[in-house]
Length: 161
Image (tube, rainbow, N blue to C red; front, side, top):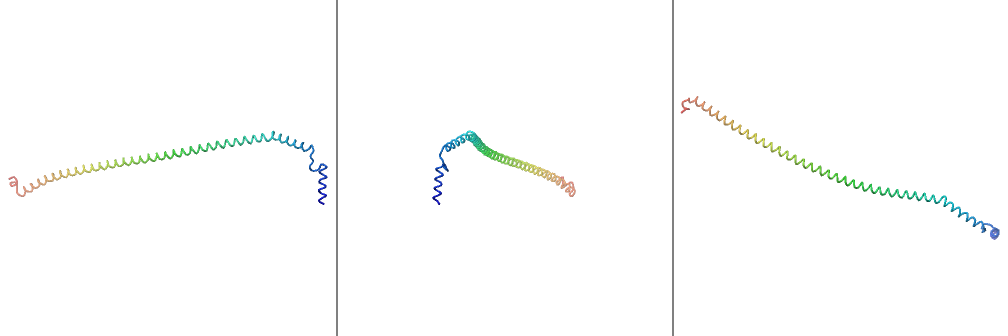
């Protein structure tokens, strides 16, 4: 049975069966090449060009975006440094103002304490002076009263002598 199948295939090949190499094969190849050339000229080149342009557009936008991002990051870093510097200066100014205020307050407190001390000393002097005057006045009054008492007790003659 296998011999008959092979024999039939050989007979068909001889008669122009499955693989017939005549003028149709080169004509079909020529048609294929013409179709490929037409498709290339009409469809593939414009499509490839559009794809290349789009790819270049995307690539340039991506590069610009990277540059802008790098610039934005650099500016953000610079602004953060300036902000930190400004904060540091502000803290220094505040610390200096607090120190100046403390010095001022201390000097005013010292001046007020000195004025209070001076007033206290002045008041003490006035009190001592008034005390001395009061004692002197009392002493004179005591002397005068003593004489009057003596005059009354002893009489006016003895006191004069």
